[in-house]
Length: 112
Image 1 (cartoon, helix red, strand yellow):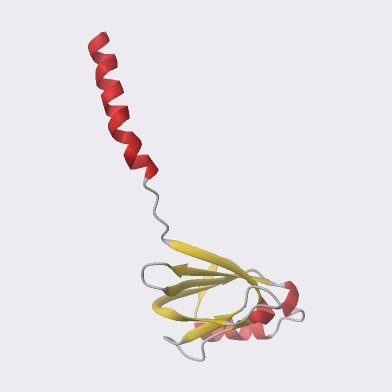
Image 2 (cartoon, one colour):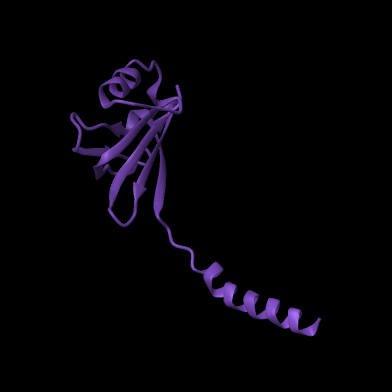
């Protein structure tokens, strides 16, 4: 019985350092639709600001970027058409996900 407890204690001790090593893979930004500038074509850059008094931040978009409209992936042209028709863009929130290591935006998502 003591041998089983010793084995379990040793395994738990080995697992503790692994649990403490968290690595940030993506950062998320929530911005107003009115403060977001989409790329004109695939593979460009986006610009957004996190608050009214903040300056615009420009970021590259990845080749594999995903534009999500109401939870579904859509092409850039359809996404641009949908967000351009919003009556009150200041009241709509957009989520921008950036891959930290690649320093590229991977997902832009909005629910209208």
